[in-house]
Length: 212
Image (cartoon, rainbow, N blue to C red; front, side, top):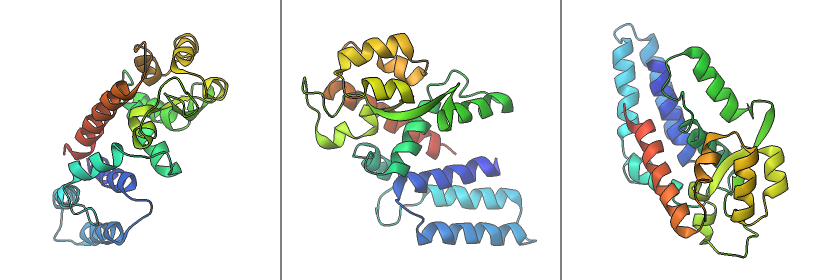
C-alpha cells in the first residue's frame, strides 16, 4: 500500500510539472524522516502522503482534480515526458487485466505499455494527423490526450500522416493495442470524438490518482 500511494503522489506531480519542484523534495524528505522516526508507523506515513495528494497544488492554486483537468485538456505533446507518461498511463486502463492482483500480469502490463508491445517498439500517434486537411482540430485539442494514443512504432511510421479513415483500416488490421482498437470503433474522428475521449481520460486518470 505504501508503494502504491507514494507512486500516485509521484505520478501526479510528474504529470503536472515539467521538472521536480521544491514541494516534492520537501514531501520526500518528510517521508524519509517519518520512516526513521521511532514514534511513527507505516499507517501514519501513508496518511501523510495521502494528505499531500489531496492538498491544493502549488503554483496552480487549485485542487488536484482541477489541476489535472487543466493539463489533460490542453497540449501535452510539446513535452516528451508528459506525453509519454500520460499516453502510457491511459493505455494501461484499456488492458483487460488492469485490475489484476497477479504480480505477473501487472509486470506484463507495465512492460507492454512502457517498453514494447509484444515484440514491437511503441510510439505516440496523433489519431487525427496534424497533416490531415480533411478536418481540423483546435491546436490544444489536437495535441491533448483526447487525440493522442500509443501505437506500434512501425505502424505509426507508415500511417502517421494519413487521414483517419485510412488510418482506421490499418488500425483494425494491424494493431494489437486495446486503446487503438477501441478508438477504431469510431468511423470518423473529429473535434467531438477527440473531446469525448479527452473528458473520458480526465475522469479515468483523475479517479486512479486521487482515489485513495
